[in-house]
Length: 385
Ligand code: SF4
Image 1 (cartoon, rainbow, N blue to C red):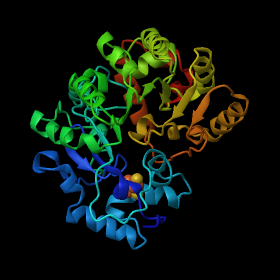
Image 2: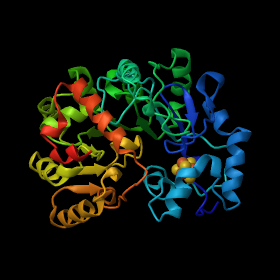
Image 3: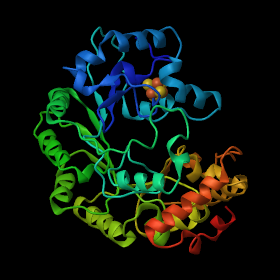
Image 4: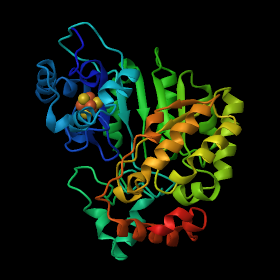
């Protein structure tokens, strides 16, 4: 079968994404509708070949991306931006030219729970159990905008600790012998001990899948450090968005401890983690210094993400964003020795006039109260909001 502009590899030689609460979606950017729930499914490979998935394949084969499911990629392409279908999906999933009747899951992105040990300023209780209590506090403080920001199916607010049952987890184990790549999500992937068992299980398979996990690396027991250093194909991404007190305000963990854990990993494994940064309004103004520091610390790869939600933490609230786009573009020209992945996320942002600046202010004040210090002491540019 010939690959076309509309045959997303996720459907033809890829697999499924299972959210911490067991909802199955097409991929991590298909967030409006769920395909099903893992508890209602007996066999994940059978489900991947169900009439629902085959209908989506047929639409793609006829030359269209289905709007209900693939709205994110459709919009990215419309705006001239890199869409997931053209970008990372092609990097992580190989095209299979055989016109197969039965599609086997090769790629799996999942989290057994939303158990986390951090409550980052741009996160919420869907992805972090630590946010459950704070989301209630935010409600009590009258920050209702947080909970009806948009009509999207997946919002930042679910307010529950989620954990897939052992029975449902077994359904994932059942398909592992054929899986070639696992993206382990969270919560914090290393805060849920069931992931340790999963890694131990995978290492014994005839063909252990490549495992990729993005961790905050703030607390890493020796047991998991040894496991990931010994696993033959493990890609570690570490979320570090800023330095020192800015990092600590955004992520609520010790900056020095996280850096020390990275260096221990580098020493033991001989590999460098990919440092993953999600620029927000809080880190925007010091990104050049941040990049210099990551280089000085010896990291070899830096990846920039795109924080689209919630809007009140987005860099697109900055009305002079063009100035910062240009500043970062110039800086990148002189930045060497570190591989930069998705650099355009540093200079392709546009000012969004619809962002309510009072939400930005209320959110900074709420987080200041939680962290016990005022971020504006370290990021004076935030005082204008
Ligand atoms: S949203 Fe994009 S990446 Fe996801 S399945 Fe659709 S086309 Fe593929």
